[in-house]
Image 1 (cartoon, rainbow, N blue to C red):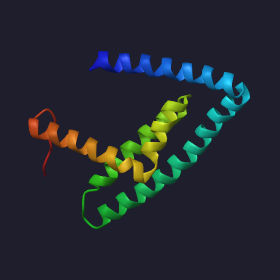
Image 2 (image 1 turned 90 degrees about the vertical axis):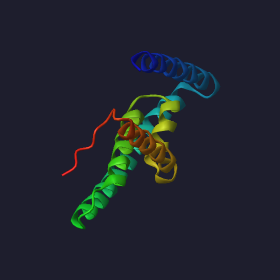
Image 3 (image 1 turned 45 degrees about the horizontal axis):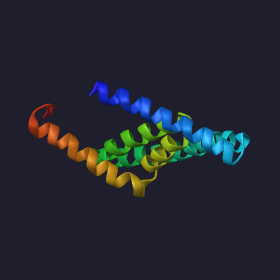
Image 4 (image 1 turned 180 degrees about the horizontal axis):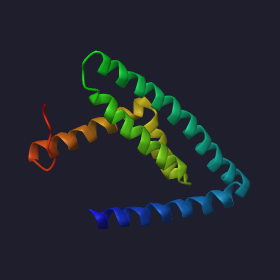
Length: 130
């Protein structure tokens, strides 16, 4: 797992640098820098808005005596999307926005739920029941 993550980080970084150079040659370095700053700013606003909305839904679920399962997965996706948006790069920004926008977050959240449920079923993750 560590090797895969390491290779992924190296490959994504190389693609981001190539994308910066390519766009800097096509457009202008100032447009690229403005794009990086703008996506970070918009990502921060969207992450805050989505995070507060998810937190309010989680509070409502708990107030009604239910576990906020969907909201936990949404919260993790929003956090991951916000962190990825703060790293400079347009490829990572696209992934970050996909995690922040509810419509595009839904399929990724369903995939993550399937992975977690499979891990629980396999016994690699245990669930504490009270």
